[in-house]
Amino acid sequence: MIITKTPFRMSFFGGGTDMENFFRENGGAVLSSTFDKYCYVNVRHLPRFFDWTSELSYSKTERVCYVDEIQHPAIRNAMKLLDMHEIRLMYEADLPARSGLGTSSSFAVGMLNAFYALKGTYADKKKLADQAIYLERVLCQEAGGWQDQIAAAYGGFNRINFGADGYEVIPLIISPERKKRLNNNLMMFFTGFTRFSSEVQKVNAAGKKKDTDELLKQMYGLVNAAQQILVDKEKELDDFGRLLDHTWKLKRKSGAAVSTNSIDELYERGMKAGALGGKLLGAGGGGFLVFYVQPEKQRSVKEAMKDLLYIPFTFENSGTQVIHYTPESYEPR
Image (spheres, one colour):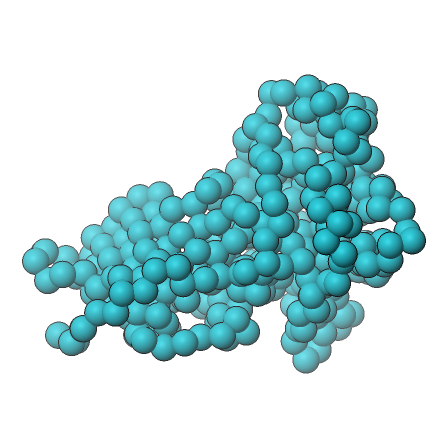
């Protein structure tokens, strides 16, 4: 039996510039961190006592005799990709799916990690990230960028650069005190709205490419500014919050499905209560709002957002991990 633990990610700057059709031509970069909310994938070979050969439990349960019968596209394609058979797979998570935290990509990375471990094979972080991107973007043909898979595999607070040759992951060197202060100044709330990121991306892609590319170039430019605020102790950390407000205003213009009237009202409520800035996490349309709030204003912001669920969190550095490994003897039929 194998159990993997894979973190969710919080993207601050550069989201959208990780789309391949943009960064191959213009370059791109994101600033993001994983945090201490996880998905867990439990995998073993299914004992041969049943009328079915594979059993898969996520938001629903599937029992099938052939891999091609599996309805969940990521599981079906991952099992084909790694030639997996007779599997019992269970998925659970600390936070809901379709909420802007890269949950589907964390699942893809954790599942691939579990499959490799079940086969008795080690897969490094780059291999897991690359194959999760291939699984979601090519095999499943889901619209979206590359940052979620990379963040889930590598973990930590990183700048991820994208270009014609692919990507590189650069861990940010932030003093522990400054990183803790940033963590303490961020407040996350669940809006209650969930959506499929790939569907949001398709709607947003329907806009004028020239206009969208210009906005993405501006958002790309903010990554350097945000990085400097974090790594330079002489710079005012509160400017990170103000820059979040700037990037959110740009993001809202980049697609029709990024925000809604309800999201806009919630955001304005948080800002009026004292937040310096914030953004909706993920492609848009719902999920989690994160605000940068100075300590003395946090009670006011929490009161203003009292209708929403507040989610405390802490940055994490591990990325996907195998947390339980019990080897099995398995002979194919």
